Image: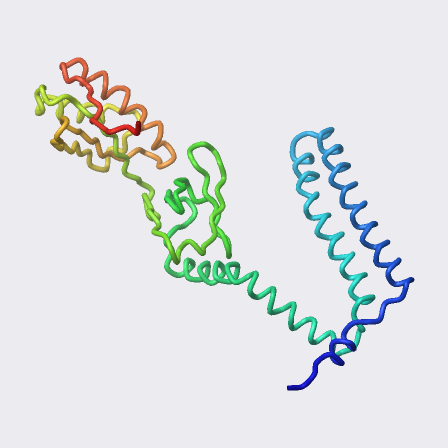
Length: 269
């Protein structure tokens, strides 16, 4: 078996006292600059307002990365002999490590290409992805951005397409179905309750009249479940629409003597 120790000896330089001092100076300077930036930039940002403050805060990790790269660029020529053979070996090892580190990134890029053709979501769609429900506002090469009902922006990598389902509420259509449920005690007039809930839906100011309104009645062991399935004028009004149906539906059922009921559930001790 060949001995690789001479090759390793040629890869690394023999360091003298001056080289160790220079390495220590570079490391100390990098640490001092990074810690100074992490303190100075937030101090500056706290005296700004609006977008400039966010831009300054966002520059902290970027500046730290730049300082680390500069420090490595200064350290490597001291440690390694800058020959063509050594550079090829070093870049090959670095490329292999980066390849393993970025395998999920590359997988997300490939999933992004697939999503461009299959279109499981488009800007304007309301989707549930990786447990988050919101409106798609941006479809990038690697990620898709959702804005939820809480006005939070959620960024999900396309990689989730390989392992999880995508629930698309409107799938490129300008209309979106909403479901509003009511749980009622079994002792009531079901026909009357159904008609009342249909009237509640038909008189909502958010109703899209060109789509059907359906009241689904389902008998459960604990009572009766009514579900209004209807469409708002604009998908972005879905939460106002559901709230309107819930409030007025409860009032209408109360007027006819249909008492609300919660299903019996077992709670942990």
